[in-house]
Image 1 (tube, helix red, strand yellow):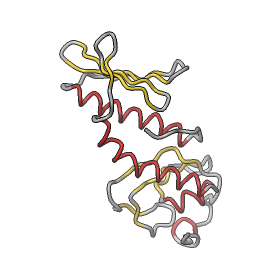
Image 2 (image 1 turned 120 degrees about the vertical axis):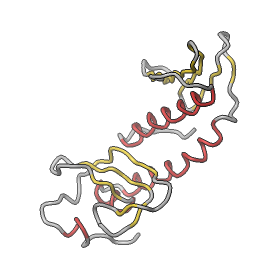
Image 3 (image 1 turned 45 degrees about the vertical axis):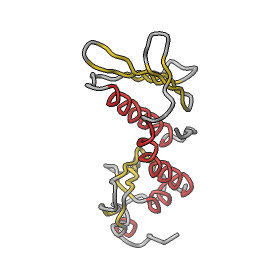
Amino acid sequence: MSETVGTGKWAQRGIPHKGWQCVGIEDLGEPSRTCEMCEVMVIRYVHYMEHPDYPKALGCGCICAGHMENDYVNAQERERWMHNVNARRKNWLTRAWRTSRNGNDYINTDGYNIVVFQRGAGWRFRIQRDGTDYAVSADRGFRAQKDAKLAAFDALVQTKLTDLTSGKTTRTS
């Protein structure tokens, strides 16, 4: 592990070094942004870190995020998980979707039931977490069924990412 302490905000007084929490992660597609904590590393995966004693979230790389939350393993797990999202999204449409009694395509995966259905001239989705009242629905219609399925995947990823950043265990699709 490379050491980043001593550069950027690590070297500034009044900036907390521990006690941060990850509130989200983003894949930029390629290394194109500088970590806002060490101000040295160019990063692809941005871990958004918040601290109660700091006024704004910082976009950081994996190493700095791990130091900030004092949990390098969790930071690595988030980054590994995001790294695999693109491959899973490419395979999403080719997965074994089934047809319900109502004629709607659905899939059960990772403790979720995802249904894609036609309403009026557009397509929508609903995601239900097994055994809970948790559900997410499309807030707009999509022109094609495949677009609704991909939007459902993105909503599922966002749901699972929220679980991942809050420390809940999340299985991958």
